[in-house]
Length: 624
Ligand code: C2E
Ligand code: MG
Ligand code: MG
Image 1 (spheres, rainbow, N blue to C red):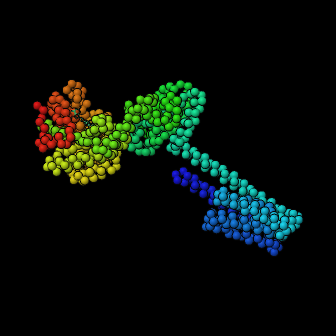
Image 2: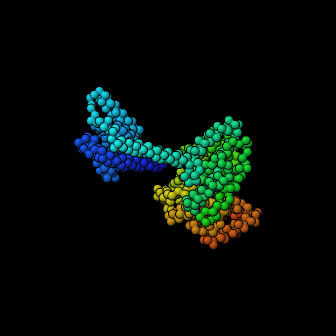
Image 3: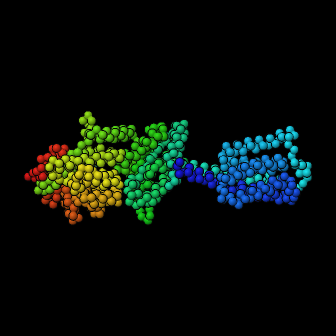
């Protein structure tokens, strides 16, 4: 059962309990009045009415005093029995019909409230049955009622008693029915609202969106109109959540919801799909061009937010699908808007895209790659290549492990491409673990072969850095292969390290504490300054090959490389240049104090078996 219905059940139980307690109190009051009337009219306790009523009343009174201890459920049973006996007994002995009818009503009411519709039906059948039975017995002359009708009618007290008791119990029943019904309705309305709205922002949720969108589509089709489904996702929302905390994230979402509502008309639909995903539906469009509103939404969400007294910025990636141009059903429209949103995000975010069939093709292709990759892993089509790193004297300082995927039928894909897909789909968790295990096993093989391997660097993806048990996993693989941690190094890109700085710092701290070396990869491609990375337990920094590529021809790139080397050294970091392909690059790097190089000029990535010679020699001939 979900929390909402748990809560609802609890509330219904409380209402029922209250009904029983209130019924008990009012009955006691009404019964008391009746008792007074009886006593005032006729103190002759020999009369059956005079005996039955006070006795039952006393019983009721005791129950009332002990009501909390007895509990609502048992009282409900007691009252049902008591009322039934009172009513039936009353009929038999006194025939005080008015009183009995009222009591039967209470009887049916309590039964229904507490024991459900079934209980009410049983109570009604019993009530009507009793009446019928007494009627038949009386008419058949089998029972003589001790009650003298003419005497009863003559006495004002008996009128008073009957009317009061009838009136009060009727009022009781009606008021309870009305109040209970009102509360039930409110509860149901609340539940309906909760089930269809997002509790954080008050916007509709996916369920409500889907049902309303369905109507909107049908309505638009009748009028030959279009409907636009605009899906918005905040760029880097996860970072905000991770770095500023969930309450700041919640605040942001609430403000985003408010801005979205402010941008559109009352008749437009705004919903929150999940996390930081929102949908705006623009119904009844005469033209499928919603560029203006797309731009307006993007601008509104990109303006700065004030959250916890600090200014915060985010941008949305927006995908738009149009009905009937792109699709005619809710599910496909939302899916296509999502595909378009992903395309906008892949292009750097902060923009909007209309869905196009090519995007769909790309999305399908990605899915296919994901599927193949999964199969590839299962069928051993993933392998590792290793690329040497050397210092300026030619000494082998390390190897970088680079994954290779030999797809079936000779189709292969570059790691940069399939790693990105694996990262998006979450497959990277398994692949990453496979890489670590494979490298550890390879190290063990070299050791067993009597080769002293240098440290091997493994690339870690951003998603792996978020795994809580990353260090544990690494330790397990090291232990399995009986390999020392100082033979492993991890390369983290600058972007991954900065993306969720706190988590990254914790993970890297754990790895470093194990004795594993850490370095920053692709340095210079992100936006962080080296100073931002100061708090991380790093050993080395790898200058991205895009800077190395042009150092011989571009003075700026050379300046960046020189600056980076100097700053890294001042922070006690080794500097490795990646992608060194030419002699000129090598010479410039050596001149400017670069510690190590890696690139085609030295050696290409190769399978482990092909590296035996270099490993045994422990050095590579330095380029002349
Ligand atoms: P990276 O970590 O920066 O790896 C260096 C890339 O540069 C490798 O590409 C390597 O083959 C290439 N390279 C080496 N020397 C030269 C050169 O002289 N010139 C040029 N143009 N390129 C050179 P590769 O193997 O295609 O890998 C690309 C990226 O994929 C890697 O960049 C890394 O980010 C990622 N990657 C590779 N293997 C793994 C892995 O096992 N796990 C993860 N998470 N990522 C991996
Ligand atoms: Mg690398
Ligand atoms: Mg790199």
